[in-house]
Length: 501
Ligand SMILES: Cc1cc2nc3c(=O)[nH]c(=O)nc-3n(C[C@H](O)[C@H](O)[C@H](O)COP(=O)(O)OP(=O)(O)OC[C@H]3O[C@@H](n4cnc5c(N)ncnc54)[C@H](O)[C@@H]3O)c2cc1C
Image 1 (cartoon, rainbow, N blue to C red):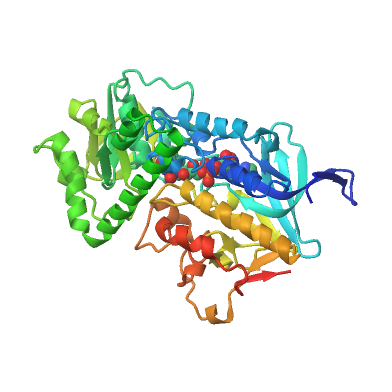
Image 2 (image 1 turned 90 degrees about the vertical axis):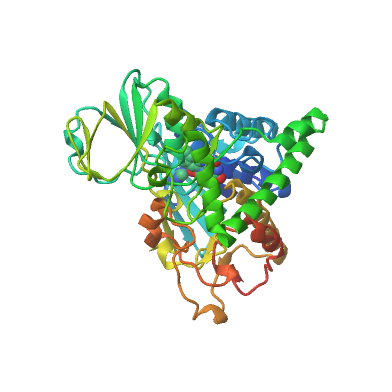
């Protein structure tokens, strides 16, 4: 069990490596899960397969100017490693933090980069997954077997972003760029740039390029909520002045942030109009009473139905106030030679158009899964607490939080997986499959996420491919860290929802 074994497959001469656990992806979830596995179950062999040529996931893929977190790094960072910088961090800072985690915990030897997994097949005869990957450099196929698959591949396709199907895109004479594939050779100097989109990506990119461009326009169909604040946490500064140890600063500040986020989420539900007025009031305070905040920064939905982007030091709004950036709220009719014709009849001229229009949701890394020879459609499964799936043996997925830091769930899922693996060893079994209990059979099968609760475009476009949700806590991803942090450690592993073999 502990030793990595290389065996010869009976049918051909290729080498098949076996590991107790195979982790998919070396993003913040994969590295965090590997850390927890080494600490909680140091005797298990494991490998991390990553299709890119380095660690970081989201923070490696996205290279557009200004790329930064919109969560604070005290909660987006790991519980076990203090974050010592300003709360909002650049991609470089996040990668360097992850690099330290890898070095300090000797994780590098477990990671195989440039290994894209294409197929994973479960056999109930052997109780093993067979994972087929391709080396992205040499195109060589490589095969692994594993007892347990720990899916840390994120939720969107890294190789391409989402671009809507606009009319006459090919007529535009300038350059079109998606922030997910930001080119190295782009020259923004003195160019008229239109950024389509109003989410966190547009909001970070625009202030980062505004100084260089002739002008940058944010073109949005509808407004989004933003929160403005200083990129600093006063309590952290005070504790540091008092020379409190960084481990303590991290933990205390984490607790403060989580406490405040919980209170904020509750307020969004209890008094949405008041919260809405406060968020919009912050913007009016910077842009002044003559700015049309009602058109450009007043969403029609209630706060927290989509992620609220944090704007450190109000840089986006200072860019608008200075005249270097502006906002247009309208719909695209079609592209033209010189830019974009809007439904209002106005034409926006541009040299460069940036499509900050989001992601393509990607179910479990675009891997073709099969169970005992039958192709697996995750849309036919029901999720066990947003981390396992009915009928799918020995697999957990780290799908984090949208309204709290994603990574908070990495730790919770890791504790659960390690407890489950320990339980299986104690029971002397090698297979666990979530299964609806008799009392669950009449339960409604609902979409993965309640669209009335949270409804970003990438989710709505692909919900039909996601596993289903039930109406009981066991059968849904509640997106509620504050409930799950208490519920997960108490999960009864002998509940009939787990079938062992
Ligand atoms: C620009 C941007 C900013 C964000 N900011 C925040 C934030 O501030 N706070 C927050 O909570 N969330 C944020 N998010 C959401 C973010 O994606 C997650 O928080 C987090 O980084 C996801 O980490 P992950 O490791 O689960 O997945 P990812 O970062 O997506 O990493 C998954 C890795 O798996 C690899 N992989 C996928 N499929 C395969 C395969 N078939 N074979 C091999 N390898 C594979 C990928 O190459 C990738 O490296 C942001 C997202 C984006 C795009």
